[in-house]
Amino acid sequence: MKKIKVWIITGALEGLGPAAIKYLLAKKQIVLAILLPGQIPTPLIGQSFEKLHILHIDPANESDAQRLMDDTIKSCGTIDILINNSCYGLVDMLQQSNSSQDMENTVCEKLNGTLLTVKFILPFMKAGFNGHIINLPPKPCIDNTISEAFYNDLQMALDNFSDNLQAELSILDKKLTSIECGDRFIDP
Image (cartoon, rainbow, N blue to C red):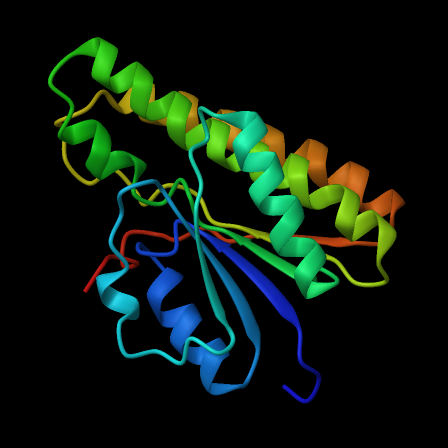
């Protein structure tokens, strides 16, 4: 990569997050890593923090999340690429849920995080010349500890969101890439 770009990575501690951050920092890119409140960025320790900005954003607190994103994005000047990885760990979190209320809260947190991130970033992408969103779905459900129907409904919701977002972005001459992880894409 010859040009320095500004990347936002949601769900930065799971899925492709840590590997993408290490790669991008090695290429001298600017990375905004989004974590949930209380998450400790252990996999990121030892990384160059000169170009790495860690943001703890609570999707349930929209006004604080909006302010934090606005301040950070304004300090960077632009947003070039969003890796929307926040739903990757959804299956693991659902498997650890103790009740249907826990499952509902988990789904709301993950889906709201995805929707809010795009909502906050889209105006900056619309204003700039660049813009690419990469959506990663939840990792596949490879056992029967949660309902396959429930997982499929979540996947369909995210697919529909991506399709509608693609239509909007194409009008703006921006790109959307949806990556299907498959059953071999698992955490190390």
